[in-house]
Structures are given as structure tokens and as C-alpha cells.
Length: 194
Image 1 (cartoon, rainbow, N blue to C red):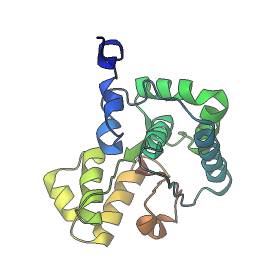
Image 2: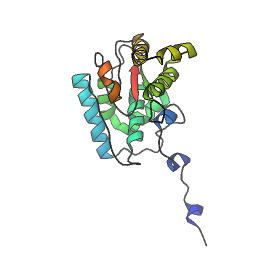
Image 3: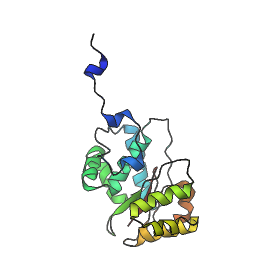
Image 4: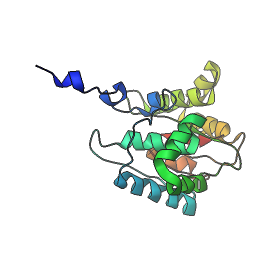
């Protein structure tokens, strides 16, 4: 008797949930991703709002397995993906959505960076500081100094995000109030332009 596993093979990527922090810079995270109409509509709304207002906070909610993290990976790769990943994201998004994101997150002052933060049982500051240290290549001393207080961390990220550009983008609601003086956008991760 033939078993289903003998004729159906599931790519390992689809055998687990997407994780923004783990999947952003690994194997191309979007291979095989199918952009649903509802996600396209949400992404377009975010891009239009960002283009018009240059600040805001966005929350995506939905059931486990609903595609929130995968959509955030698409957004992150449209805004700041490595060359190959950005090409995949652009192909998935299509011309209209890719153009909307290029307008919403212009690169005339330099490339954007994504600080990929996911929830954990660790304090928010520790989580954001660790992710920022990875993104910005901070030394152990720089990371420790940034993690001394909320204000120190915010200042360190602002310095790293503005050292080679004029914009900063964030996406954690609890931190959004601190960063509203520059560009502010949201997904499930924090993105900073450097």
C-alpha cells in the first residue's frame, strides 16, 4: 500500500512557522510564498499611509499560521532585502506593490536596515538591544552600553540609524512614541535606515 508520504514531499521551510529574526537573512525566506489578496491589500495600505504621512504605527493581528510573519518578511525584503531576496520579493509583490514600497521607503539617503525582533520571555529592551546589535554590528561594549537603559538603547539605535541617512523607521508600538520625530513605519519587526 502506498503512503501519502511516498508521493507528497513537503519542503522543510513549510514544516515550521516563519520567524522574522531567523528567516530574514538566511535561505531566501520567500521561495514558494503565495501573496494572498488580503495581505496585498494590507501591504498596499501600509505603503500608501507611509508615503502620505511618513509616520504611523501598524498592527497586524490574526490566527497562528495566518501569514503575519511571512508578510512581514515580504515587507522587510521589499524595503531592505539583500539583492537576491529583494528580487524574489519584488517578483512576488508585483510591479504596483513594489513601486509603492519604493516610494514609501525611498533610498535617496542610503539603504534601510531591518532590526528583526520577535517576542520572547526576555525583556523587551534585551530583545531589541540584541537584535539591534546584530543588525548594526555593535561590539560587545556598544551593545552593553545601549542596553543600560531604554533611553540609552533608543539613542544608540537613532545614532546607528541616522549616521548615514536622514530617516529612522520603527515598528514596535511600545517604542513608537520615542521615534516619532523621524519616519516611522511598522510591521512585526523594527526597521532602521542607515
